[in-house]
Length: 281
Image (cartoon, rainbow, N blue to C red):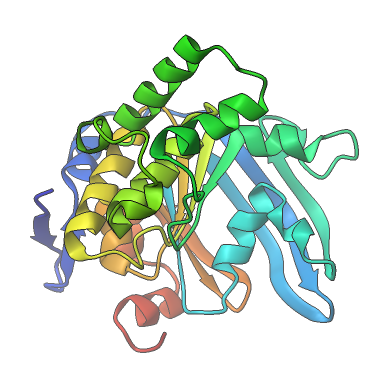
């Protein structure tokens, strides 16, 4: 992916992806809201990890979350599919509305939510199974047993993750035999196989080499045509390259949330400016 570079009046370098340049040249189109976080707080025991979070995630956009270590980035996206409930001491107040429904409502089955809101983790975590069985695992859990249908899902998902051509002749081989970058794309394909609405990514390229990172970034740009993506990243250049919106988290709070080009060129909060310019973090 070739970066387009421009400078503002202060000669500060701004990195823009081609998609961002195209977007700025096009009329703004209001998109539907996928997640609406309202006055959301989260505690781990006595630790107040998230404080009064208010964020709106739009469909078919890449929303990046940046901030220093321990600021609540990963905790927030784990709250979006209720993975935080796996921590016994976690408790929450406020609301997270997904497609008009509070995900913490007692009637909302967590399995239903996680089918619609998939997760890709920091470290590639394929199952110790064949490539085929990794992708077919989710559909099988949901009751699909027909081999022809499973074959179609596996191929479609691997194509969607831009890895079909690399693995189509080794589907019966163990996924552990793939490179780290390939394993991460297998995990993305596994997520796509259950046809989610939203894909959450928790630093998906932090363990990858630059070439694999580029492939995942290009994939993210392609996937947003059909999915809404929330990505946590320590890499600010990555956020600038691939995201439409960026939220800056600090000490469990959202300091600023806006269009990515504005966050990186003319942030409204001095703390955002200080973090982006490398004064801390």
